Length: 222
Image 1 (cartoon, helix red, strand yellow):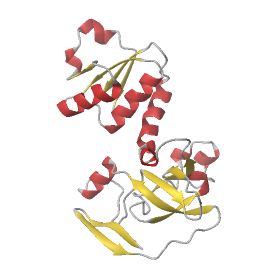
Image 2: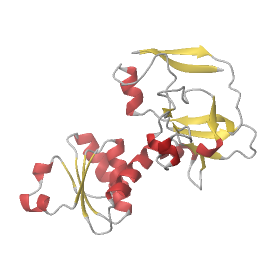
Image 3: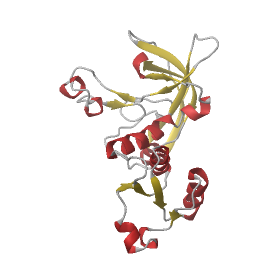
């Protein structure tokens, strides 16, 4: 199969690779959509810590089973944990001592075929296939809102409306928060107002009055 590898900072190369063969508990999947994350851009520019070249990027993925008819789309959890270390046994798999992320520590989804643990596949549940490729960054926003314990009616400020900031803001809004946001870039402010359906997107924290900022209950910096 033909894959896209990041051979070195600033150099992407098409290369031939053998078709992967799944092992026990794994599934061979076809990649339908792959997002481009800030992590990928940092790696391309040589600014990604704990990164080795060459590496195949891609961890924001929509995939489908090879032998499934009609095809069913899945989102992928790209965080591979061992399941046996102390953090894994305690349920904190994000702290796995052997944690590997697709597209960072092991080759990712910039390829037609990929092997994924069955446990890391999540069915579409009515979502469009192309939407599944952004589930992973949206889950980051959901995780931040859940950890902050944001509740309906709370005054929440999201500082920064890049992709992750937008995800945080969307999830806070879904919880019924009284949402405000700030973003220095005009294009992102405009996108934020449209996506969040609110005018409460300003250029900076200083744009609010002192009394308003004091009234904030939760601040998320993204």
